Image (cartoon, rainbow, N blue to C red; front, side, top):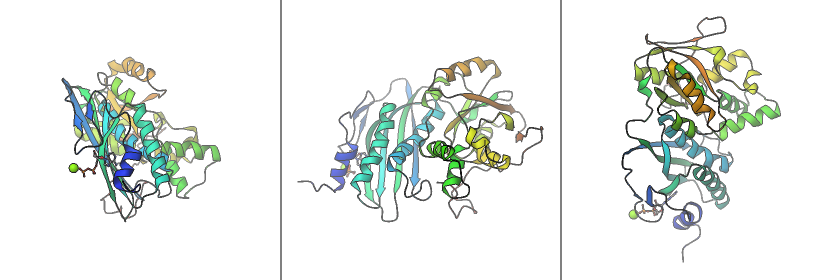
Length: 335
Ligand code: ADP
Ligand code: MG
C-alpha cells in the first residue's frame, strides 16, 4: 500500500498520464529513464528554465496559471529556435504537499502541454523547505540546419516583433502596488504576466524566413542586444512603431518606454528578416494563432543600438538585460 502523500503517489496522481507517449517518447514517466526515439534527419532543440518562488512568481499566484507559465516560458525558447515541442521533464521542489495546489498546478501544466502535443516524459519530485522551485527541460525538434539562431541578423534586415510589449511589466508594477489600474486593464495585463502565450506556430513558420530570432523574456532592448552581439551588428529602432496595448498607452510616456523597452516577461518573438522577405513574414504571421507582427526597426553595420523617439531623437534606455547576479539585483526586480 502506497502512502497517498508519498512522492510516488503524487507522481502517479498528478504527473503520470494515460497518454504517455508520442512518436518521439517511447516510454515516459514510471521507470528509471525515459526512452526517446532518435529523430532521423531532425535536430533536437533542448532548453531548461527554472522558476523560483518570490523571484519569478508571487507565493500566492494561482497555481493553475503557474503550471501554465512554467511550461510556457520553456516552450517560448523552442519557439525562438523555430522548434516543434516534443516532450518535457519537470523537476519540482515543494515546500509542502498540498493536494489541492498540485491538482491545479498540474491542470494548468497539462492543458498547455496537450495543446502543443508535448508529452511529460519524466522528472523529479523533492522537498524544499525554503520555497517552491520549478525546473522544466523541454525538448523539441527542428529540421537539421534550419533552427533560428541569434547570430544570423544582417545589416539592412528589418527587425520585427510579435504581439505587444510591456503589459507584463505593467501588471507586475500594479501587483507591487506601484500604480493602480482600471479594473479591465488590470485583468488584461495580469493575464499577460501570468499566462504568456508561447509563439510556437509563428516560430515554426519563420524557419525559412527569418535571419535571426530570440524570445523577449528580459526586455526588448536587452534581448535585442543579445541578437546584435551574436550577429556582430547594431540597430535603429523607432519608438513609435513599438506595439503597445491600449492599457499601456493609457500610462505616462516615460512609463510606457520603461515597460515596453526594458520590462520583462513578454515572451513575444523578436526576429530579423531581409527586406525581400516582408510578404513572407506577414504570410507566416497571418496563418498563426491571431498574433500580429510589427516592423520596429533596421539592423545596421555599426555596433550600437539606438531607439529613436517620435521626434527622431535617441531615447535614453538601460539596455542591460535582467541579470540575477548583477550588483544591484539584491532585491528581486521581477516576478
Ligand atoms: P529515481 O528514484 O529512479 O530517480 P523517481 O522515483 O525520482 O526515480 O521517479 C520515478 C518516475 O517518476 C521516473 O520515471 C521519473 O521520471 C518520474 N517523475 C518523478 N517526478 C516527476 C515529476 N515531477 N513529473 C514527472 N515525472 C516525474
Ligand atoms: Mg532510478
